[in-house]
Image (cartoon, rainbow, N blue to C red; front, side, top):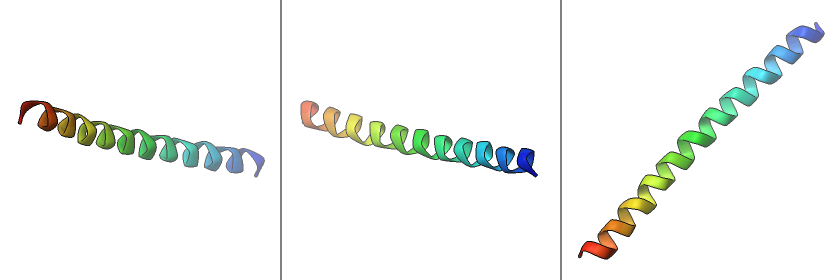
Length: 41
């Protein structure tokens, strides 16, 4: 039972990390595009 809880915990944190990295990458691209548009128009 303890092992199961620990597994679920690690699974949850992995999902969270994946979500955060996706979010940050998206955000980075948006900022990057705004930056380029600002400088090249």
